[in-house]
Length: 155
Image 1 (cartoon, rainbow, N blue to C red):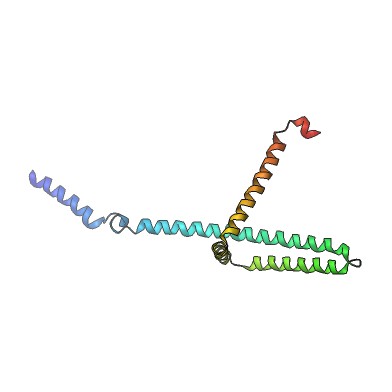
Image 2 (image 1 turned 120 degrees about the vertical axis):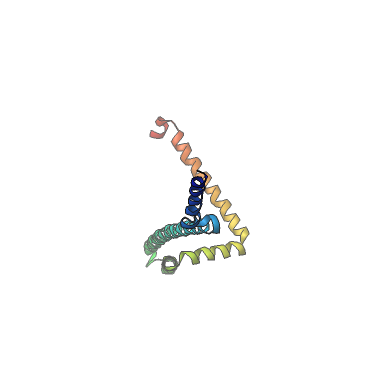
């Protein structure tokens, strides 16, 4: 009777020790790190695709802006030629910037932004504050317009 119990215990131990090594990550600690790295790669890829899409959208918007500026400068042709040429030249530079932006790599843009922020932190901080003030102002106007009584908005 005792030998049967011992055999069962021995069989159970041999099953777990030789045929089932258990999860690899529990002994080496590498599988969770690989999973985290894989998740980070997926997140980085998704962020790069999103940033690339927004970069193209922004480049298209800038090209449209340049076309609008160029069109508005045409009204000065014939009367104030120097002004028409200056506007046309400025619109061309804006368009060139948009094309450079469209062709730029997202990682390069990110790295250039980091370098710029490190070289001119006061300017970046001032820009962030200015953007915050504009955002608050716009939000207040939107909220004030939405919270006004309907009769006041209709008038």
